[in-house]
Amino acid sequence: MMAEQKTKKALTEDRKNENQFAPDRRSVGPRLLWVWVVFFALMLSSCETIISYNLAKALPKNESISEQPVEEPPPNAQQEGSAQEAVILTDNSPASLGPVSDQNSQVPELPAGPTPGDRPVPPSVVPVSAPLAGGQRFRGKVSTFWPVHDEVRNDTFDVATDGVSVFVADRSHHVIREITLANHQVQVIAGKLGVSGAADGKQGQNLLNRPRGLVSAGENLYFIDQGNHTIRKIDGHSRQITTVAGLAGASGSTDGVGAAARFFAPVGIATDGAQLFVTDGNHTVRKIEITTGLVITIAGTPNVAGYADGPGKQARFSTPSGIVAHKNDLYVADRSNHLIRKIDKSSGSVSTFAGNENGNFGENSVDGSKVQVKFFYPTGIATNLIDLFVTDAGNHTVRQIQIASARVRTLAGSAGQKGLVDAEGSLARFNWPCGISIFEKFFFVADARNHAIRKIE
Image 1 (cartoon, rainbow, N blue to C red):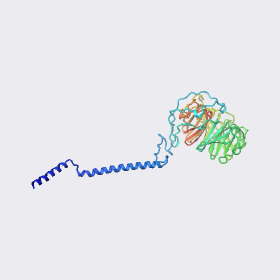
Image 2 (cartoon, one colour; image 1 turned 180 degrees about the horizontal axis):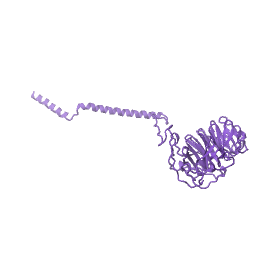
Image 3 (spheres, rainbow, N blue to C red; image 1 turned 45 degrees about the vertical axis):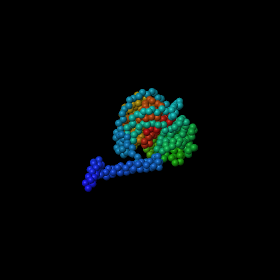
Image 4 (cartoon, rainbow, N blue to C red; image 1 turned 90 degrees about the vertical axis):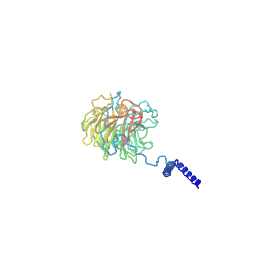
């Protein structure tokens, strides 16, 4: 009996000693719970990875399981619909420029220049331009839109766009070409290659003589037939050509209706929807009522070149070239005066909008305020309703003018530096840019001596 009690006591002591090193059973439950939580979490993560991988294989490349992040607007960009703030344009240092001959607005034949494939593209870029309407930015990024290959030496003096196509006046070939923006398909829509004439009618039968300025108005395209001294129209549906004003082969300055009116080698054309406005080679600006064909001289005196601001016929121009309508005003590139002029459509009153009539033209290109700025044969002009864009042909640059302040800056190209370089801002190169046309976020420039159409964003 005593031995049995000693044995039980010894066993009890042994169990106590073992329990000193055994874990507390009250802590085992929570620990096991955490183990299961971690286990299920790992399993769930693995399942999501497998599902995502299988979905990614099943979806097309451009689709995504979740929404793509919204791209943030560039710094200082205006939100769409907000009020436009003043754009501060800084002056650039003047650059020297050698003499360039005018030769009555005609570009002479030049030796073949570099082809688009030979263009060097500098690795660096210049700063982005100030924000424009609706938060848009024109960076001055230049690319060659056409021709992609130098298979045809096109005479690209003027250009227009309606946002679907680009229309090019190929003056020396007596045709107008259409280039579709979507696929760059090129076709002749007016005239016959290399054949001059003055015939109206359907495509394939009509003839042109050195077409020049172009403007898209609704579904129709109006253009200057410079060699015929007439204003003509291409119907957007039938592609039939009709003569709106002037008489082929008869030059002059007579106001009148339709064929009774006379022009002399007109250059630029613009529209406000109801009227056409034409810069005439006799140093005047003319107006044509679209519905009636009535032609009226609204500014300048025929065959009297000069410089003078003032009402209507008291004003003087010297080879007015590009023209654009904006609200109640017209803006004219007064080419041989090296100025941008403004005409009140209602009164015909003419004022100098930008440029210094007392400057030493051609010696430099100056940016800044309206009285500081200098141009050298400004030729084409377009607007996005906030700014004017001018091809400064003699400086081989494209200039930007804020309408509200008349401050000017160089958007693309470098004064006096001609060439064919696709790049941004001052690194780009042009060679006598002429016509210009804008559509929303980009515009096109007829780079005459490069025989190319350039695109600027």
